[in-house]
Image 1 (cartoon, rainbow, N blue to C red):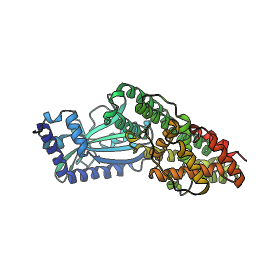
Image 2: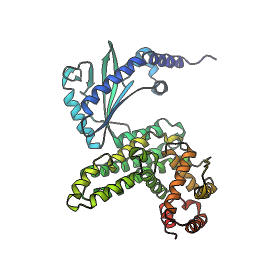
Image 3: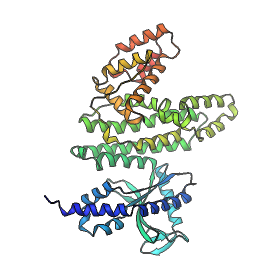
Image 4: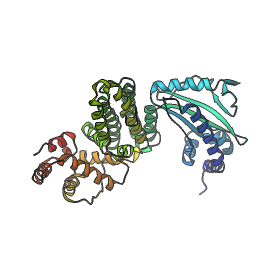
Length: 431
């Protein structure tokens, strides 16, 4: 049977995008390069990125918004205001307004019809005649400015956004959980309510992170460690509580489990080790010891360390950027985990105790679903890494007899207690 005309329209639009992808890409690169040169050296700026709307995203938008009724598909692609997306990402909410003011000062030449360009740069134009920030349907403010850029004799539309780390992280989560996930439509109102609560929590995280950068004391490193743990735990707990509720229909408290995962993230994960070449906590502990011997200079030196490449605020920013890339819609809470580990000696004994109940206990199963989502290797690799971390933590410095006693106690514990920090601390004390 013949297909509806709309599908032919969509394919023609997608082909137009394909045929002009090089031009769109060059235009996006030109924008990114220019904005990076103007904003890259500003302390509040994390980075400038760009993207071209994908074929699937283009098709989805045409169908969802009935855009095929407006104009021919070839014109539609070039008239779409966000066919190119550019983002200036900054640290905190307050930085969004600051960077917008910088942008407005930069694009100071009035071209008429609400369009502005920089001095001597008429090829890049922004529609700054529209009040900013705008307010989205969900009620949250966003700095989102339409513009266009001329490259190779062709004019390309783009949408520029200025987003703090937390707002950028939040919009990715909302987009993946609600906007693009039809499976969750049945939870629509509930999910929106829960995500609103999550946004409020992330707003608190933005404030706390801001304090880390602005209110460091003499023992700043120690304070940063605890603040970092608290902020990560809060963010992960809010996100994964929402996901567990969406997948099971049951509200479940997982705070103890996210606390345990956060401890792993900042002490042993592949990400923190990549940043530092070794455990992040070990690096910072050595720095604390280094400043401790000189009480007079300790406060100032601690401040310098806190703002160096090994600071907790920077680590939190990097971890948030990493976690933002996760596809949370693929986390199969409530489903069996298929994982194996080829380990020797005590590692193997501990692994067997976890594998024994990994699909029999909901909380243990959920813990590993979250853990696998956050770590970056295969499930088998990540499981082996976790077992080594867990075993090394509870067995450090013990004799063979003490190891036997610790294994015996571990085997007696309920499965839901295995990964908890309280459990690990108790097992460490067995002599």
